[in-house]
Image (tube, rainbow, N blue to C red; front, side):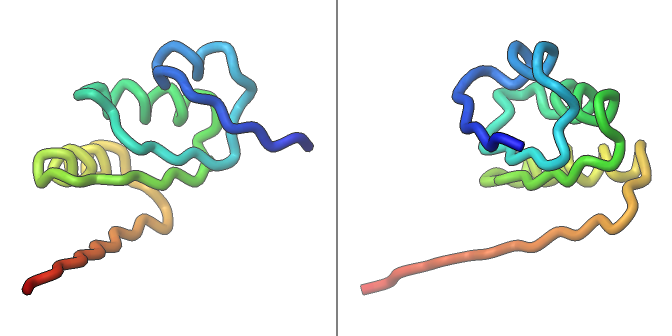
Length: 84
């Protein structure tokens, strides 16, 4: 098993990669559902970690989870604030 870090558009690169067991999504450029579908079709058991900065992205994630029930889904919100 070789671990690799690839920097590319997910919709471009996922089509040519083998089925993932774990995926980190740092941004989706508005194509979140398309990316999640590519992952789900390759491996419906893949673990997916999403970085959602905007509330819109969080809403997209929740909608996707309603549309395609996911086992062991979990949402963790982390907030860091600094005030002087």
